[in-house]
Image (cartoon, rainbow, N blue to C red; front, top):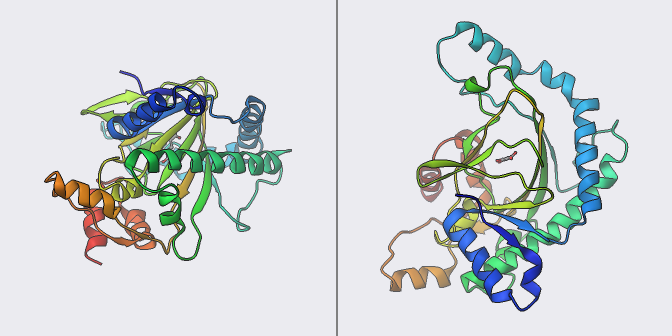
Amino acid sequence: MAIPVIDFSKLNGEERAKTLAQIANGCEEWGFFQLVNHGISEELLERVKKVSSECFKIEREDNFNNSKAVKLLNELAQKNNGQMLDNADWEDVFTLMDDSTTEWPAKTPGFKETMVEYKAELKKLAEKVMEVMDENLGLPKGYIKTAFNGDDNKAFFGTKVSHYPPCPHPELVNGLRAHTDAGGVVLLFQDDKVGGLQILKGGEWIDVQPLPNAIVINTGDQIEVLSNGRYKSVWHRVLVGTSGNRRSVASFYNPSLKATIAPAPELVEKASQEMDLQTYPKFVFGDYMNVYADQKFLPKEPRFQAVRAM
Ligand SMILES: O=C(O)CCC(=O)C(=O)O
């Protein structure tokens, strides 16, 4: 079983209907799919790989080696009690925000220029993918984007640059513990060679196979709510290994913290005609994020219940 790989360029030709159907299947059956021929140039992707890896070496590696995760893992390995580390991840991470508050790594040549360009390209790709979701869900064009913008027109587009260094005890720690994503649409540029990302499907963990220069798309909790459960956010995790430093660059298209998120009325209507009585709450995304901050690694259903009660 492998995550679907979809040629995004075919959306503009004779195979449009087939490509729309493949993306619908990716969203409905998997919650994850990989896009190839997505329009982001290989030259830019090569630069993103280069500056991200250089940034880790120049500005991050020493800090990681002295991080809480490293200390906790050493302590746990000494205890040798068969337990896994459950309060830290074997991940070096920094986030590029959507606005002037971003603290850019200062010592890596070309990092800021490359990532500004990459983020702009990825944001356009995210908006195209959201329009495909609108179309597949039978919603007006721009529905998801408008919902995410909220009244203050402040949908968030952030980028998280991660490294998962080789680990001396991969059996005792995850690169990133299992979770579903809080937000909207996630676009992941993962390492070509070092794998580790897995999704949970039918009770089984399945690898998201590394595929050079593909962009992995997945949907978060807000798309699940907005689509009234047609597109489920899916559990995923990152495993670590003893060799190879895995790089990933994840871009998140999320609602404004002030946006009200609710199932699209058209989809609720359709579901009630089909006697599907599952209901999702209506809430303010910032409230959801407050709940998520403490419950990221727990099931999403209690999060939905918590915001319903607000
Ligand atoms: O690094 C990865 O491959 C996945 C990252 C991820 O799941 C996340 O940041 O939520």
